[in-house]
Structures are given as structure tokens and as C-alpha cells.
Length: 381
Ligand SMILES: NC(=O)c1ccc[n+]([C@@H]2O[C@H](COP(=O)([O-])OP(=O)(O)OC[C@H]3O[C@@H](n4cnc5c(N)ncnc54)[C@H](O)[C@@H]3O)[C@@H](O)[C@H]2O)c1
Ligand SMILES: [Fe+2]
Image (cartoon, rainbow, N blue to C red; front, side, top):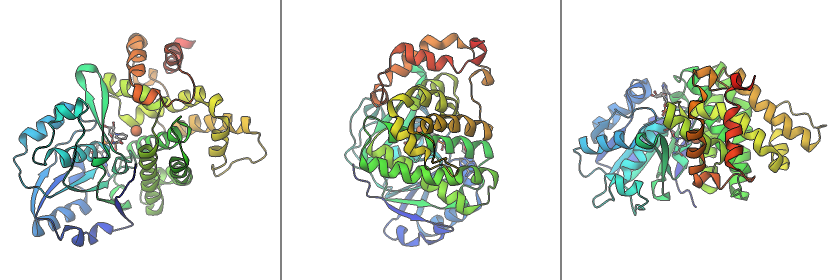
């Protein structure tokens, strides 16, 4: 897969988008009400209003469902949109990607996309992330919750990759600490899962290693010091590289097991991944010792004297400690969720075949059950 997006990055780069707008008359801006309140986004809206015909969708909820998108499509009375701009977290960007397809004349319906029909074209698009993140701006995926099945599905097509991406660190400084932490762990999961996936390859490995280095250097600084623009920009790039790694490889166990947690209990995507990160990596580690050791070597305080085996174990310990330091939950007990639904969770995770096939070790229903069980420490005593 080739990513042809033009990426513009740096402080206040949003101010220079006049030339991107030159050939566009009718812009559809997709965002949510939190993001629309950010000063830099207000300025962008002012600029768009003065130079184009502007339609705004600002009702995208976190973790959108197929019904949320269907409602937006129904309420959207716009025609002749020639540029879709998404400004927001992964939820907004995924909806913007879908709308860039759905607003084209003759496009497949949302139901057809969900049934696997592939879109042939989209309108021009610009994606501007405000979390770091999902890396949605660099992936061919749009993830929607399916409430009836209590899980999530991905609509996947390289057609949805945008023309332009802007990585502007000042847009992420208003993220509350728990969102900066959990979305940062999501990026970490993309990077480490793609790096260790059966479908990993030199292209995705390169993206993953660059992204992991930036993330290990800057995630905790960005959370502790929200106005640190250098750390924020590093995190936007780590997130982008995570997305690019997904585009060339794919995630595996954490994401497969996380979808039912989001679908059943509505746990935010990054939080569900944070809970699963260390337990899943502990399961996968014996099958990927060399790659884990390579990632360990990127840690700022890596101990070069350790053996490969020791490094791989230390990396898993680092992940567990990182989730704790970021004050993210490390178990489902902590969220007040009991183990009643364990059989459902196991079945639903195994159903995510698209990702399960990327796990670098054979994985049985009993393995998945055992990993989920570690999320209920009270049961293990
Ligand atoms: N397309 C992909 O490749 C991909 C990859 C991973 C996850 N996802 C999907 O992305 C969604 C999650 O996205 P997310 O983790 O970025 O969170 P999100 O977009 O759901 O945002 C979470 C909350 O943070 C707020 N927020 C976002 N940026 C902010 C900012 N700068 N300041 C203040 N508040 C801000 C939002 O308004 C929202 O309330 C899920 O639906 C998940 O399944 C998609
Ligand atoms: Fe993710």
C-alpha cells in the first residue's frame, strides 16, 4: 500500500493552509464540540467561512457507531462538497474519512461499505489530528461500533487515505491528561503490534521503530508537561508512524481483544488497549524475543548488558510500569466490571479474524480466555 498524503507539520502550520484551499469552493468540516472550541480551530473556521462555502458537522461522538454515521449522512443536506476536512481525534477522523467517500455522487451506501463493498473514489480530504493517537490520518481504516453485535468493525480501503495531513502540536495541548495518556498507549500498541505481527515487513518495521523511539522519548513528557510543543509534536509523529505501520502491516492481539471491551462495556479504545497491553505482550513475547529485545534497546535507560531473553522480559515489565505511571487502569476489576461475560469476550475476540491472523504465536480460545482472566485479578486470588 502506498501512502501518498502530503504531510505538513509544526507549530502554527494551520495558519498556512490558504494555498490548500485555493481550488476548493465547498468545504465540509467534520469535528466535535470540544474541538470546535479550541482557539486555533475557531480561527480555522473563520478562515474557511471567509473563503469558501462552509458546512459543519460537529456532532461526532467518541467511538462512533454505524448508527451515528448513518444519522450524520441523513442530516447532511449538502451537495457538491469538494473538500472534506476532519479536525479531531480518531472518532472524528474516521467519520471524516467515511464522509469523504459517502458524499461522492454514486458512492456505495454505508451499509454496502459495512458489507465489504470497496469504494472507488472520494472527494479531496485533509485530516488534522487532535489526539496522538490513533494515527487514523495514515491508515486506510475507519472503525465503527456495531451496538447490536457489541463489538467494532473496520471499514478498510486505501481510497480513504487523505490528500493532506497537518500535524500541529498546539492542537493537542488541550487534551486532558487521561486522554493524552490513553491515546498515547493506543499509538504504542499500533507500533509494537505491527512490529511483531506475522505480516510485519521492512517498511512497517521502519515506521514502527522510528515511532517507538519518539514515543519512548516523549509520551511521559507530553503528559506531564502539556504545553511542551516538542514532545507533543513527537507524539503526533509517533501516532502518524503507528498509522503508517498499520497501513503496511496490521495490529494483532491487543486490538482484537480490545474491540469487544469497547463494544460491550464502552471502554474508550486507548483505555481498553492500556489494560490489555502488558498481558497480551506477555503472551506474545516468547514468539518474538528478538524483536522485543530490539524495541527494549530503544528505551532511554536500556541496559545493554542484558541478554535478548532478559531484554524481552524487561520490555513487558516496562509496559506494565508505564501504564501504572500514566495512572491508567490495568484491570477490568478497577472499572467495576466482573467476569460474567468472559465466554462472550473470548468468542468475540476470536471473531476478529482480520487481526487474530497477525498474532505471531498460535492462539487458542483457552489462551484468549487466560489473557482475559488476568484482567480480573480479584478472581486470581
Ligand atoms: N482509523 C484507525 O486506524 C483507528 C485506529 C485506532 C483507533 N481508531 C478509533 O478511533 C476512535 C478513538 O479515537 P481517539 O482515541 O483519538 O479519541 P476520540 O476521538 O474518541 O476522542 C476522545 C475524547 O477526547 C476529546 N478530544 C480529542 N482531542 C482533544 C483535544 N485536543 N482537546 C480536548 N479534547 C479532545 C474528544 O472530543 C473526545 O471527547 C475509536 O473509535 C477507535 O476505534 C481508529
Ligand atoms: Fe488503535
